[in-house]
Length: 173
Image (cartoon, rainbow, N blue to C red; front, top):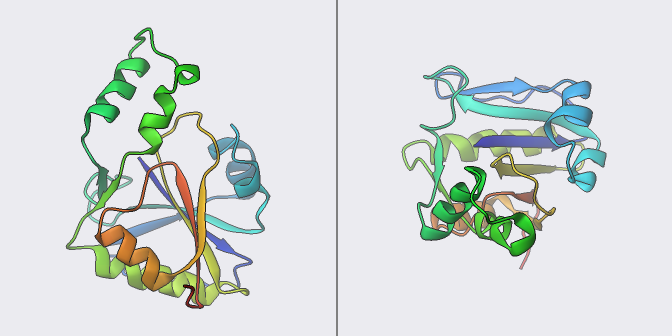
């Protein structure tokens, strides 16, 4: 799973705990033509700096930061990836986008601090967070929501894979 942050119109350096996280900045070529080349047109058109988020303890790994809910629907999707006779056209891809993100509870406060700092670095006080399994799927967005609302959703298991969350400084109902 990829964990991505896109700081919209970033100005300044994002402060974060390097003991907990590794924040790898994507260059323009990676952002435009490599990571989301499939069908994330809106995501690719946003002006800002993109980052991959990894564990600070295990180099270039995300598995100790977050996982996704092990459900029958996820298992069905992986059977498709293993050349089952199912296909995205038959709805299998929708099952995967409904898988919930489970973030490591011990690291969630550090993640919240990192995102708060990313929002501060944005000229319009906005960033996108995206937990992604590399599969061709339709664009899905949630937001604009506040940082508080995002973390309420994350803590309660209401954040989904392959969905970009638009998070802003302001509070929204």
